[in-house]
Length: 185
Image (cartoon, rainbow, N blue to C red; front, side):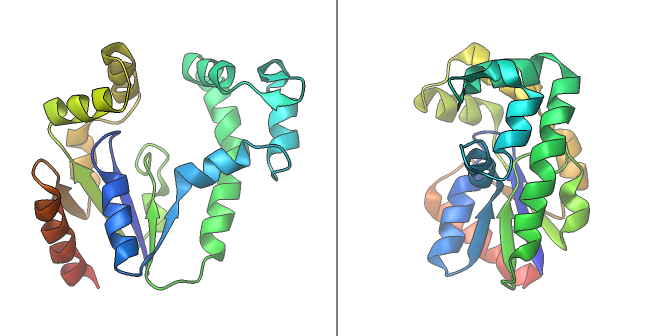
């Protein structure tokens, strides 16, 4: 069984994943694998360098340039996704753990919910999200841009199989996770 964990930036997806790992579940982190694919000698390196040559300086990827290109022009975003997404899915599908959890930040935006038996949406109030992200060092303008580039929470709630509200303490979050696990496993 494959179970996706998703939510907007700052909602607590990683905290859910970390808790699941303490319970000995395997959790595949799509963002971490994506970051690995951006490194030299990865399967995607040559393809990325050919697709975005001006984002490389002395053979090294300038992530800020790439990010700007991708979030400014939709065609670049699609080009990047056409290189990275098949490799991420290949790695995910090669995992044989049962259940297998996967942290997929943009699950609904890229329509990957079809690859999972269940999805769990982690939701937090916007004020709490913003406070968490400011504590991570992001400025308010960057936070709003990132949130703007994600599907609305209302739309995600409509598509979610299970919802975990993360507005309280870690203890409250862990209780919510345990409740959802009992319902789906």
